Amino acid sequence: MSSESIKNTISLMVITLIAGLLLGVVYEITKEPIAAEQQRAKEEAYKAVFADAQSFEAIKLDVVNVESKLADNGYDATVNEAMKVLDKDGNAAGYVLTVTDHEGYGGDIQFAMGVKLDGTVNGISFLSISETAGLGMKAAEEDFMKQFANKNVESFQYTKNGASADGEVDAISGATITTNAVVNGVNAGLYYISTLE
Image 1: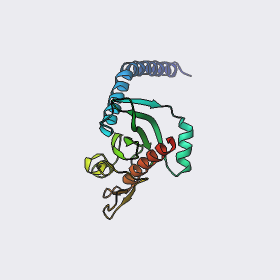
Image 2 (image 1 turned 135 degrees about the horizontal axis):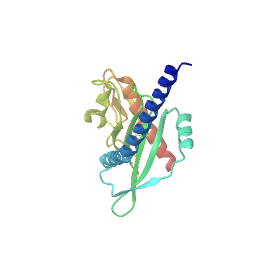
Image 3 (image 1 turned 30 degrees about the horizontal axis):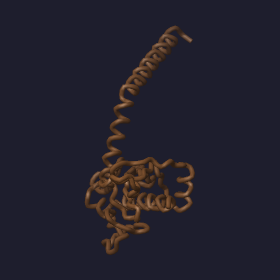
Image 4 (image 1 turned 120 degrees about the horizontal axis):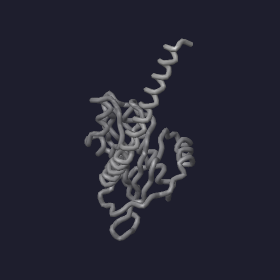
């Protein structure tokens, strides 16, 4: 090996080491602000789907068991977090979940959903969605999300012919995959809540 090759190899190693150290420093500086922002966004989403909540109490999740049950029932989704909603008197009022559906056109779709004790869905609020602009991203618009609000059904299904029943959701034109992913994610959340009772 020539001295020029050794010199180039050492230079590359030094550059790689410095770049790695700088990335580590940037990660440490931004880690806490990013986590705080994600927590704030989650709390806002929880309040959006359960405005009457006075406080939230975490429900311990056995993630492997939950994912196994969901998969056994045909859901390609994960319940990332489950919270019991408490009213001003400290009584249980319902549940708020963070659900990730893995069937989106652009990848995972994560949202919060609120459900009263009687099974009525208060609504959904997206935490992360990367669908096609002008098509799948319409899922995050109020017109689509409100189709789930104030509905007490065992499960939802989408239709391309106009919703005519409480359990039906109008599919987003040109974004059937996204519609299906959101509907399946909400149904996975409803199924999970049914296992708590």
